[in-house]
Amino acid sequence: MVKRNPRLAALKAGYLFPEIARRRREFAAAHPEDPARPETRIISLGVGNTTEPILPHIDAGLTEGARKLGTVEGYSGYQDEGLLELREKISGVFYPIPGKPFGADEIFISDGAKCDIGRLQLLFGAETKVAVQDPSYPVYVDGSVLTGAAGSWTGEGYSGISYLPCTAENGYFPDLSLLPENSLFYFCSPNNPTGAAAARPQLEALVAAAREKGCVIVFDAAYAEYIRDPALPKTIFSVDGARECAIEVNSFSKPAGFTGVRLGWTVVPKELRYSGGESVNADWSRVMGTIFNGASNIAQEGALAALSGTGLEEIRRLCDFYLGNAELIRHALTKLGISCVGGDNSPYVWARFPGRDSWEVFAEILEKCRVVTTPGAGFGPSGRSFIRFSAFGHRADVEEACRRLLKLGE
Ligand code: PLP
Image (cartoon, rainbow, N blue to C red; front, side, top):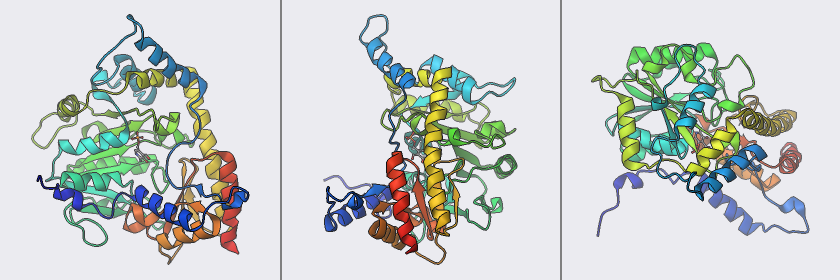
C-alpha cells in the first residue's frame, strides 16, 4: 500500500473549526434542543461563515453569468488567470494608486483567498522560514505544515515557525525586531481573530522591516471592506516600497457573501523578486496555470456586478449589517465588564479572560448560554486567554445570543 504523507500526521489535532463542530455536536447530543423551548437552541457566534443572502444586484450578476453560458455568444470556457475585465476592474477599484496602477497580469483571480494561501507556499518551498502573527488565521500555519516548512510540533507551536505575539500590551501589532531574516511573513489586517486593523505608520514599519530583512509579506486583506476609519489603509500597496516585498490575497467572501460562491484574487507585483532575482509573478502564473484552471465564470460575472456602483453600495450595506452585529456583541461584553477589542473595523470581537484557558471559557459559554464561540488558543499560543466572537449571524440570533451572554455575569 502507498504510505501516508507524514506531513498530514504532523498537523496538530485537526483543523480548529472541525474540532469546535465536534464539541458542539457532543454538547448537543448530551443536551438536546427542545423545539418548544427556544432558549435551548444553540446559536453560533463561532465560525466566520456569512449568513445573509447575496444582495439583489450582485445576485442578478450571478444569474446573468449562468444565463450567458447557455448562449452561443455568451459561452466561455477556461479563463486561466481570470476575466480580463474583472482583473482591470479590481485594479481600478481596490488599488487606485496614482500613476502606478497594477496591470491585469499582476492580478490573478482565484477560487478564494484560502486556496491561494495554500498554493502560495509552492513558490517558496519547504526550506522557507515562516513567520506569523500570533494569534493568526490557522491556514498560514497548517498550510506550512503541509508544505513541510513548519518543522516539528513543540507542544505550543511548530519549531520552524516564528510566532510574533500580538497582545493587549503591544496593541495587537507585533514587535518587528522578532521577524527573522529572509522569511515569509503572513500578516492579516483587519485581523482574524483579533479584529485589529493596522494603522498606516504600522504598515510603513512592516514594509521597511521586510525590505531590510529580505522578507516577503503575504498580506491577507480579506476583511478590508470592513474598515470604516478612513485613516486606516485597506491594502499594503498603499505603502511605498510594498511592491518589492509583498503579495496580497483578497476575497469576495466576506464583503459580498461569496463564501459559498467562491471567488478571490491575489496581487503579485512584477517588482517582487526572489533572492536570485527571478520573477515571483512569472512563477505564480506558472503555478496557477499548472494546478488551477481558473475560477468559475459565473462567480466572475457576479464579481463584476459587485464592483459596479450599485454592487459597491451593496457591499457597504452588507458589511455595515455585520458591523452592527459586532457592535451589539461588544456592547454586551462591555456591560459584563469583559474587555474586548475589534468589531469596529472588522467582523470579529476579541474578548479577554485574563488567567483563564480559552477552551474552558468556550465550554462555559456553551453550557451557560448555548452560544458557540471560538477559543483563542486555536489561533496560536498568545490566544490562550481570549475568545473570538464572530459577527456573522442573523440579527435576531445575535440579539438573542447577547441576551444570553448576560448569564455569564450571574
Ligand atoms: N483570510 C482570512 C483572514 C479569513 O478569515 C478567511 C475566512 O475566514 C479567508 C481568508 C478565506 O477566504 P476565502 O473564502 O476567499 O477562501
